[in-house]
Length: 199
Image (cartoon, rainbow, N blue to C red; front, side):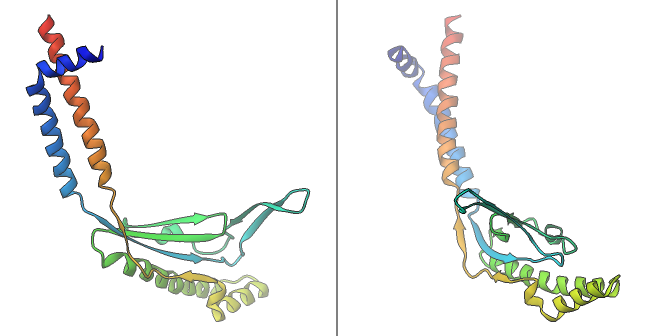
């Protein structure tokens, strides 16, 4: 079977090589026109006014087998503050930390975008707490917001700013899949041509 297969390719080698070459040319074109991305990452933990719920599971030996953090209530909804398509945010329930990632074709953008957002949420949170204080319905609530306003670090006990750029180059996937696709199309074409010639 394999001998017949190679025989078919040999008979239609010009068709095979032509289509395969076109596929490789297109693959190379997409490779050189696809930009390399630059990425930067920042981390922060946000404690909302109602705190953070920590769930812990312990086995019969007293060993912690599971731990997760759930954001509290009455605070900012962080994802709604993202206004850029190049900036992504995710929440890790395993440690209660938000991860900010910015990607851009311009190496000067990611670090600034991440760090500007971190500054923005601190400022936004202070304004948010000031507004909450104005409409506090009890003395306890009023004291809680006053305390957070006087101690901004309590709302953000962890902030790690972006300080490095990582090159995200996945263009090798274009080469890999382009080669496979070119080979597949070339082989399919010569098989179809052979079947047509047999009719």
